[in-house]
Image (cartoon, rainbow, N blue to C red; front, top):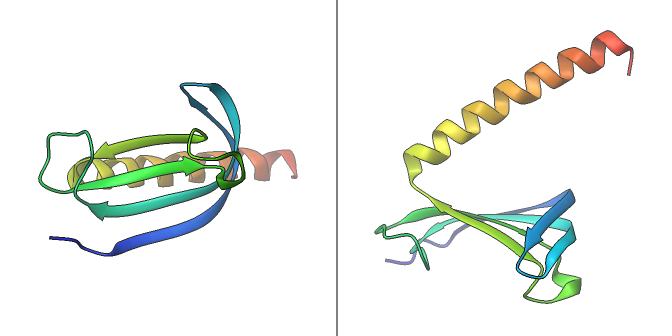
Amino acid sequence: MCTSVVEVCGAEGAGKSEGGWFPVTSAVVSYDHPHHALLEEAITIDFVNPALGPGARAAVEITLESAKALAAALARAIAGAEGMEGRRGL
């Protein structure tokens, strides 16, 4: 089953692929058949820089439950970081 669930957003940072580190410009999150994980369906997160070609990609394929745990961990880390930044007056 192809789900057609895809979300794309801009992202600023760096990713590491087989060729080394590269600047990340986008993140693509999808729910579909994984290419490598032995799962029926997976949340796939790709950090990419399309201007650098297909080698500028760092990807993970995780279960839906793992993705939920990751989203919660990200929310907690973001809240903590925002609290620290607020105390610095930034």
